[in-house]
Image 1 (cartoon, rainbow, N blue to C red):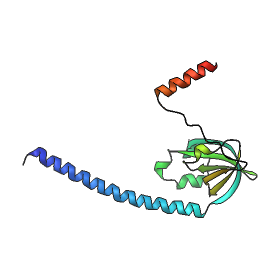
Image 2: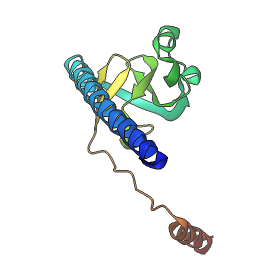
Image 3: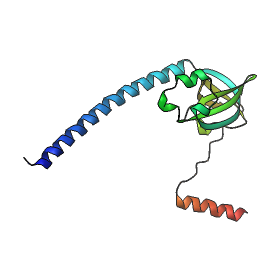
Image 4: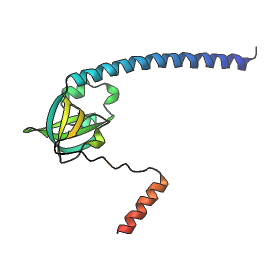
Amino acid sequence: MPIWLIVMIIILVILVAATIALYFLGKKAEARQAEQDELLQKNAQPVTMLIIDKKKLPLKDSGLPEQVIAQAPWYSKRAKLPLVKAKVGPQIMTLICDQGIFEQVPVKKEVKAQVSGLYITSIKGAHGKLEAPVEQKKGLRAWAERKRAELKTK
């Protein structure tokens, strides 16, 4: 049996083993995520708030309480979180926003939100509907068209 064939069989066996391991790890992570989502929905409370500002910042620069930063895993301390600074009642708070609704959060407007602890899970307009964000096209051609439109307006 040639050497190259033995090497190829070993590589194939390693790839199959890695695929099987990733499949089971993915199923386990998916189950954990579903459990956490269910817990968030169970503990969510409706809150009316005035959104002051929204940003994506690393956890260490977020202004969240030290306990929250200390409990975060090491790999998420450098990742940028979608943060919302809002006035809830008489208090100004920094809240973590769900990644899926971060673009929908209006700035300097009052909204009704479902909040679970420091986490905003969903958002609705307090006075009417929320404006949908305008999605910009990506790419060189779209960039050139935007620049041309800017130059025409000047």
